[in-house]
Length: 237
Image 1 (cartoon, rainbow, N blue to C red):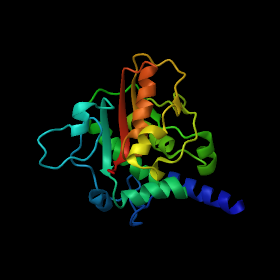
Image 2: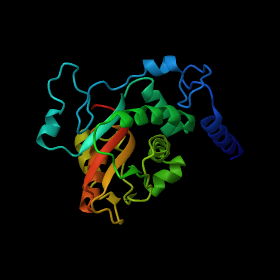
Image 3: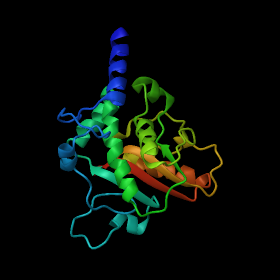
Image 4: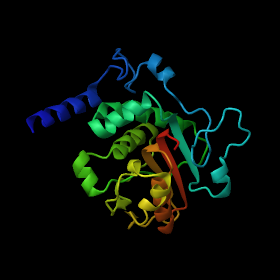
């Protein structure tokens, strides 16, 4: 117990006061947790579908993927990176090893992309929620941590209680793409009046988009005017 308390204290202090690059440990004066050299080497997502952020070929004529041409799940999507190293290492370190100091770099990357986006500004950011059981196991919600940092950087409003996860379902990462689409049916509940509001969901990684799509359905049932997705990294199946 004492050792866990020490590591939590260490992570928090590195997160708040750290002035070294989390990738190469070089000293850096910026507040992103990343030196300029490592920042320019990160796998930023160059071209993506405007509705789901899935990566598109550099020479693609369209800005919308074939799936979203038929039935887009979201009104728009913004992703900062492709899900490859070192972003994969940073996200898994944050999510599964409690390395909260990595959140600064990840949030800075996504915030910079949000600032560049041309789509209408959302009324509120909401992090993808964890079920209470997952929260107890992990001790924090990485999407909420990222959303708080992004709200500070962008000035966007944040609401961490607008929607909740009411079903403790198997982790999406353990399922096939087909299973992911049905695993979360009825897993979320919005009991807040949101009629006419523009919502942006914040998450660390989007793979099939099943989690965000189920959240979008629930938010639209509750009256949301639009639902966007802001994710640090976009993966593909």
